[in-house]
Image 1 (cartoon, rainbow, N blue to C red):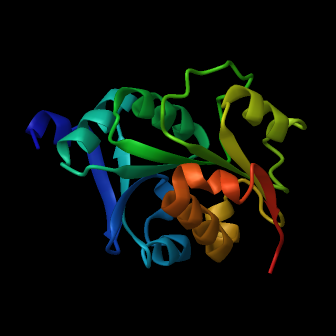
Image 2: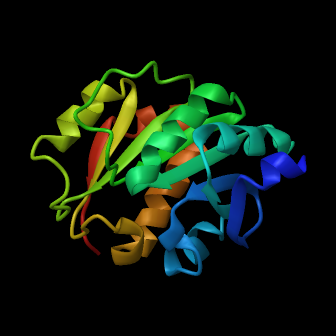
Length: 184
């Protein structure tokens, strides 16, 4: 990997074995959610200077298929990176911020799951429908009992849903097109 690409992406944490998942979620580093997700995947938590830098870094990794997880304001970066990098095969978008008001995005070929906490006051009232309109062919999952930081508030449920989506990707549709995950 070139130094120019590596300088624009900072690795915050790495854990697990298996298929690669790149996470744009600062709070995930050293968290129970990371430990749970790392039981199934090789998770690398990063901070990227831009979508272009993230796409180049993933392409330079040599992996054939990468899942990307992004939360909050970093969702827009993940969406743009997926449009630029065909190595990204699935996106899990957690408590998106800054992507509404929604615009129809080309969406790229990567299947998407959007996780929204039922107690997330930062989301608009019609967030679930808005994400379905903005991201056609996406799967929207309402995580009951969680606010904006689903990974911290419901780490096992978060890892189960994100992991199942990364495992199934396009086949996740057979399970559901929209769902709610109730508290344990």
